[in-house]
Image 1 (tube, rainbow, N blue to C red):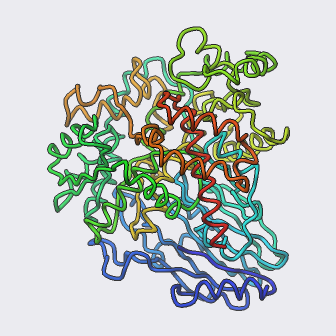
Image 2: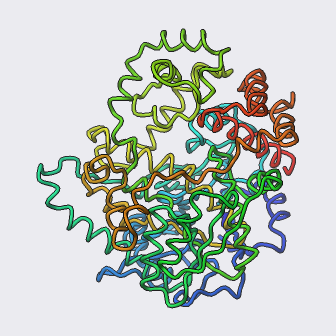
Image 3: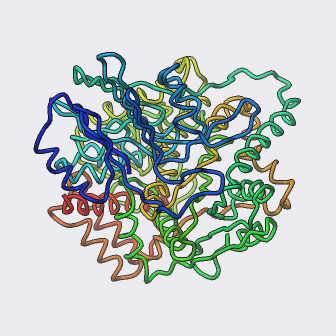
Length: 623
C-alpha cells in the first residue's frame, strides 16, 4: 500500500490517527513542511525477480521530485521490446521534461504518487490505474489531503459515512463510479486519470493521462488486412510474454481462450516451467478438462484446488476481508480461493498473471446489440413501470423457466435508462425490485459515469456506438469489477497481480481492430481464437464455454448457509435494506432455499447485496 498526507497546515487529529496506524509497519518519506508519504513492503525482502533489480516498493527521492509506486513499472523501448522502467534514470527525467505526459512512457498498469517542487510551487499528483481496478483514494480537508491506494486504510482514519447512492450504484451497475466511493466523504481517482493537488492553495483538479483512440471507419475490404492485424496483435502479446516469462510468473489458468493463449506465449519464452493454478467446483467441473489440456500443451504444472460447499462461509468472509471495495461479481469467490491456494502452495512467486481485459479489448457481445438496446429504450417508460407493477408479485421476472414472448416483454420492462448505451451495464431486473431510491440518483450516476467515459477518448461525442461501448466495457465492467476480483486480494496476500491484456500498447492496438473482426461471422473475440488455432484444436477453441461461475445458487439451497445470508440481509440495522425492500430478500432467499432456479441477474443482485452489507459491516466495526 502507498499513501500520504499533504497539507498547508497540519490537522493534528488526522496526523495523530495516521501515525498511530503507520507505527512500525510502514516506512515514510518526508515532504518537508508539507507532509509525508508512506508505504509498506508486502512482497518480502527475499522476492527479487530475475530481471528486476528490486521487486519491492519503487521510489525516487531528490530535492525537487519524489515518486512512489508499488506496481511493476514496464516501458517499451524504441526497438519494440519491453524493459523494467527505472524511476531514477528514466522516468524522473521524462517527468521533469514532459510533466504528466511522461506517464505515457509506462506500458504496464500502475498507480503512482508524485510530489514535485518548481520554484515556490509544490504539486502533488495522485495517479490511478489506466484500465485496471487500482485506485488512489483521498479525503480532502480544509487544509490538506489524505490519500492511499487502499480505501480500507483511509476508513481507519476518517469516519465511514455510508453512501446510500453508492449502495444503489453497486446494486444497479455492479460498482460505484468514481470519483464516488461507498463512503460519502472519501473520493477515488478514476481509471486513466490523475488528481493534481496544488499544495500552496489547497486546490484540486482532475485530469486524464490516457485517451482511447479508434479507427471508426474501416475500408470495405478490411478483411484483406486481417492477417496483418493478427500478426501485429500476436507480436505485441508475445513481447509482453517474453518480458514477463523471464520473471518466473504464475498464471491463473482457466482453460479459457485468454489465459490459454497467453500461457502458450509465456511457454515460448519462460526459462523455467510455467506454474498454473485452477479452481474447480467439484471433481466433475466441466472446464477442468480444458485447463488440463492447455497445461499439458504448454508443459505447465497445473495445481488444482477444489472449492467445496462446506467452505462457502469462510470463502465469502475471505472475499470481504481481502477486497478493497464492494462490487458485484460472485466469481470473486473462486478467484479469492485460488489466490489463497497459491499462497499455501507457492509462497515465493513474485508475480501472478490474470488475463482479464482480453474480452474487453478483442470483442464482447454487447458490440453487436445496438438494435436491442434501442428497442429497449424506445419501449415506453410508463409501460415498463406498468408491467413491473403488475408482475412484481409473480415468479415470472425472477425464475429461469420463462421463455418466449413473456420473457421478451419482461426483458424490455426490467429497466429504463437515461442513456440507451448504458442498458448493458445494468445488472438486475431493476423495475421489479421496487428499490427505495431518490428520483435524482439515476441522473446523478449517469452524469458521473458519462463524465469519466467522455474524458477518456478523443472526440467522444463523435464516436460510434461500438467505440463508446468498448470504452464503457473497459472502464466500467473490466476496471471496476472484473480486474477488481484479484488485484487487492492478491496484494493482501503478498502477490503482484499483472494484467498484460490491458497494457498501454494493447489498449492502443485494439482501437485499430475492425469491429467485424472482433465479432466475425458471429464469433465473439475472433482475433484471439484465431491466434489460438496455432496451439489448440477447434473443439477446444470454439466450444460453448460454461463460464467461471461458482455454485452460489446451490449453496443457497443449504439451510444453514441460506439462514446465514438471511441474517446478514434482513438485519433491521443493516444498510442495504435501507435501499432494497425486506420483502424482496425474503422472497428470493426462500425461493433459493426451495431450489427454484433464480435467473442469473437475480443471483447477481443477491450477491451484490450480501457482499456490500458484509463489507460495510466489516469496515464500520473496524473503524
